[in-house]
Length: 73
Image 1: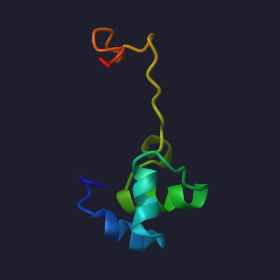
Image 2 (image 1 turned 120 degrees about the vertical axis):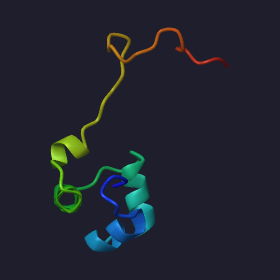
Image 3 (image 1 turned 45 degrees about the vertical axis):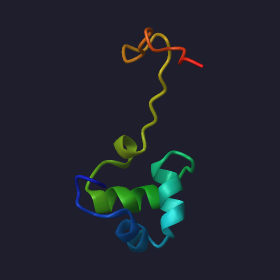
Image 4 (image 1 turned 180 degrees about the vertical axis):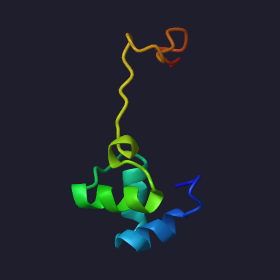
């Protein structure tokens, strides 16, 4: 969204949802239905699978930083 130059409120209007719903999708709190995924991906000119791919870090992942996990309490 950021590199496409489309603001979140504009994208929400373009796909017919309110900005709060889109915010929850963007922040990973909501999963969009397949049609909405396709609409968003088409507007942003990217693959929906790539756009909505979830990455889960595990201790075996190369991105996992053993020096910062667990976080200090």
